[in-house]
View 1 (cartoon, rainbow, N blue to C red):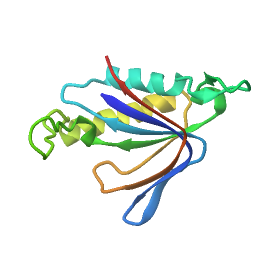
View 2: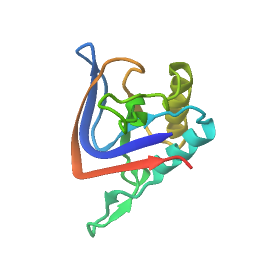
View 3: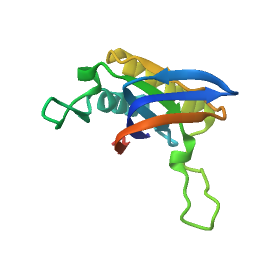
View 4: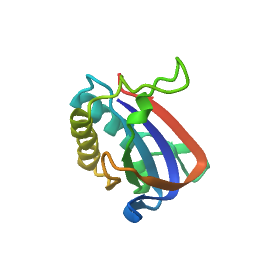
Length: 146
């Protein structure tokens, strides 16, 4: 699995013109699932997300986690994180998991975050979405499961 983590002051996701998820201070997380990924990978990345120290303390150092600041997560499924554009001009997505497998592991990631005590808002799996955010910092990290 692969996630793109963006620290955000506020964010929302729309599907069909309707807001389906919204957060204030927290993280927007794009979640990609590869063929052969496991629930263990989902739990690993949820633990990373919840405990990653990327919020500033009183001294301005990135020393606080999502748990420490009481932040939320806006989780968006993103199969294009496994796009391969190394040949030609049109990416292929052969490394991405099939939709049924990807949805199951995306939901496992979200459930594991909730078990960590994190409030999670989501987009709609498989839908065309519009994601808006104020990337705070900006801070953006890409994290792969082992």
